[in-house]
Length: 312
Ligand SMILES: Nc1ncnc2c1ncn2[C@@H]1O[C@H](COP(=O)(O)OP(=O)(O)OP(=O)(O)O)[C@@H](O)[C@H]1O
Ligand SMILES: [Mg+2]
Image (cartoon, rainbow, N blue to C red; front, side, top):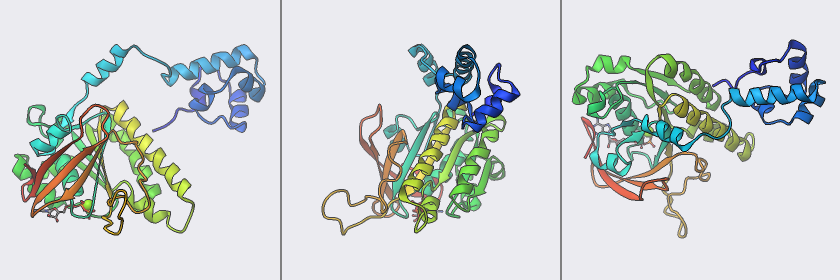
């Protein structure tokens, strides 16, 4: 998403914008967050003019408060996509929400990718069947996207398998930079292409491998935070759902604390609105547990991964 260029501010001439850029004011936010004194000194403009530029940048960014009725209105537009399992949907308050990031983490084979594929299919269902009549973007960082599996799930959901494939835009991310660019590029598909969900499977693996032995952990963290922030913004602006996966390894060697703590730490922090921990049970059975949601009680749901897809 573009942060808005400073030329967008009303009343900025070429000279002023040159000077501001030299002084490090490269986007709307940097101007909006500045003060008249700082800005007038940096650009050699009067304080009054600086004041006006700041006010306009803030308007353009829609900064500030709005009545809670506005936020209710926005919440009312929120849509939900069924996971295919009633139990899992119920735990999530009725399916995965738009305007939010839903993260599922768990060990290999716990069902993270299967749920991602299922959501890419289910978003295409009409609203009365638990979908949004929309399309999906699938950012595949681990090379595990399987079109045949989509066809299989689509058939079971009563969707033409070829139509289902056409409605999913897939891209393989080769590294974390590429992953960020793909998320940026998906904005166009959200804006005009009818996409209602972005799936990133997985959110973390490229960052983990790109930052082993190079750069610092703080760099990785910062970049990943920015990526998550970027995704949340897309979710908000386009009323879309974001589904991300994160592999954690079971660590039976840990006696105290959380034995499923991801190696390398909880690198996702708390940026996801809904966080679900998935674990394998007997056979096709899986258990999802909702952790720290803003409005829902903690809970568990048992579901299954079958040939036809995610089910109760
Ligand atoms: N066609 C199918 N029919 C039945 N079950 C399937 C089918 N495809 C996958 N599964 C089940 O889903 C499991 C794989 O789950 P999934 O790929 O979602 O794991 P994951 O959590 O993404 O793991 P990883 O961390 O390795 O990516 C398989 O072990 C199998 O139990
Ligand atoms: Mg997977």
